[in-house]
Image (cartoon, rainbow, N blue to C red; front, side, top):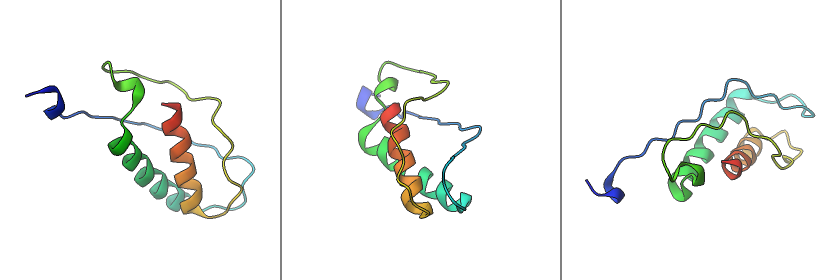
Length: 87
């Protein structure tokens, strides 16, 4: 199998996600939007830290501010973009 044909696996485990400063949210909706958007970003753009093989990132810090919204879809997508940018 050539390099372009090899299957690559990216695994993101999030033990706990705490969002402070938001009103009541639909956690399942945020999670579904986050998962969908992060999957799309990884498929389309890859993961820069994973280029040279297996990497483990224990924590991400310095993420940009998230939009002040109560829309689970919008919040999940923005969170996925921030996490992908941090990878």
